[in-house]
Image (cartoon, rainbow, N blue to C red; front, side):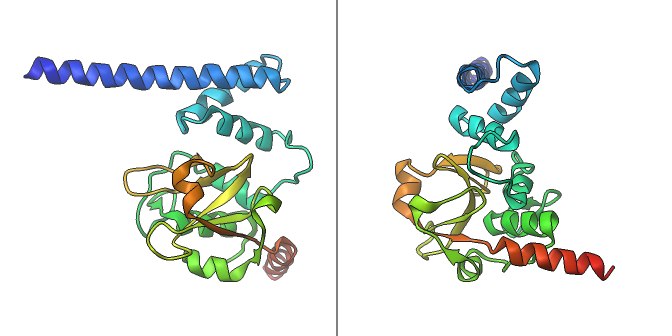
Length: 211
């Protein structure tokens, strides 16, 4: 019995290693097509990102975003802060890297720590805060909402680009990138909101000037 358990563990470890290796290899190939030219630093970033996602295309979008290669899109500090939390464990009610995050906790933390903006604590409150955006008009940094618990706005993430979003999924998971077009997320998508960044920056500058 013990030998069987050990064999199972080894098989699972080998499968996990192979999945990660394939993700890194796929990302490296995509990176070459994107013009990274085999830069060793790019390969290090690729391995780190592949460790947090089984989606090599999503990992490439992260690379392109963080290196300013997504044409037509400006840097979004809330999204950038959320990407810094990749791999942080999910925890219901969590609002920091130390405690872990739930879905709205990740958004709240990212907004406050990037631009000093205080957002509503839950997904429904965030949906009431921003400006509604059509799905075909999504930009990196927009909030995307899903019905995962029988409520229209019961889950929230941050749009990354190319139909990917970063979020804190559920118990046992970690902050990660997922594809909005897969059946589960596509069927539960309920809308998007754009945070008024001009107001956010003005408020952040005002708070800084008062210190």
